Length: 284
Image 1 (cartoon, one colour):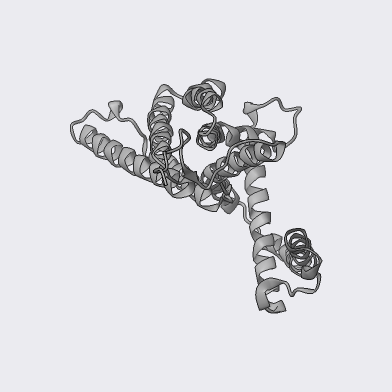
Image 2 (spheres, rainbow, N blue to C red; image 1 turned 90 degrees about the vertical axis):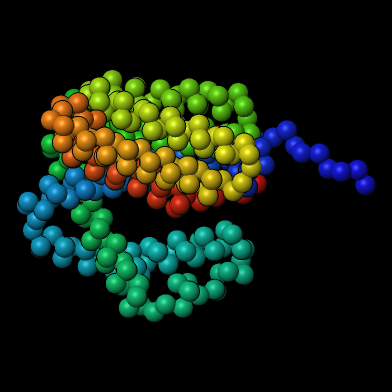
């Protein structure tokens, strides 16, 4: 037999060519999934700090009936429907919850409901603080959504670039959008020049390092997750050492980060990594 010749396309496990509308929906929603996770830690952190100042324990009592409704009705119904959709009618009588009893489902449902209430309160608090971002005539949560959108644009565009690597022309378009996303977000939402630079430089490095490694082949999730983690850790470590050195030399005004800005980026990259780990894989 003649030796096999390598394909011209990158051999990337965990992704597949875009051939149908469903493939396109998978890519767009997968990128949105990752972007939401990237914004999650910072969003919840800011909101939780605001909520903690005016926290009423009585609010958590509403989590009990809501949690029981989720645990005993909504979750089993959705799980049964998912099972039927994936394995056919034989799953109709399959037990749900992998053998876990009602106590487990009740506690997990109540915990989920409590988290949902806290996140909702966090969104409302952020909306009240960041109201000037959008016209006051819009929905109450619109300012908070706009704030989250400013953080989500870059990981969303970068993920689209990585997932379309089998289509060079489309990938190149998304690369341009991803590289320009930090600048665009900065101009749209009035970021400082430092904020734009400290977002653009590592994110562009993440974008092209991920593309380079994907073109060499490998499993999609592991490849891009490692790219984000390595660039983010290196960037944050170098910036921390540089800023500490500038501070010791009495040149703190030239620092790249403020303390709050540094930890904001730590939470952003942690959320991005979590999103890459949690998003469902697209099987080749």
